[in-house]
Length: 125
Image 1 (cartoon, rainbow, N blue to C red):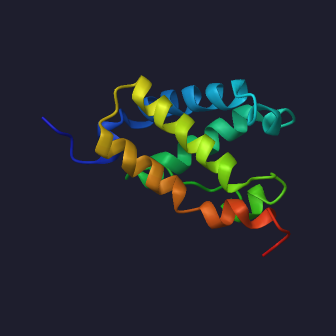
Image 2 (cartoon, rainbow, N blue to C red):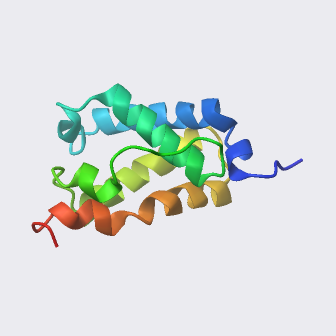
């Protein structure tokens, strides 16, 4: 029986946090993306990403960190790096047997901010 919300289908806060932990483990281990996180407060990133995805999935949590654009201006994102992160997110969701449609919904929630993530690529666009 399918749950009512994406949040429920992902296992609520605990399930989403598990996916986020898997995702950030993969990011940190990635040869290209890992160095971007060397000086980052990884626990804070994991918490804010969890809140972001919980809210996007219809849960009661709210994302109350800095706006996505502002929070990422210092990160040298490129379209290729974002695609690599998306691939790792899909792998993380797959590791928890998340249904393909639900995985797409999670990725779409993140992908909606691609322009904000790329804002620092060529200066403040």
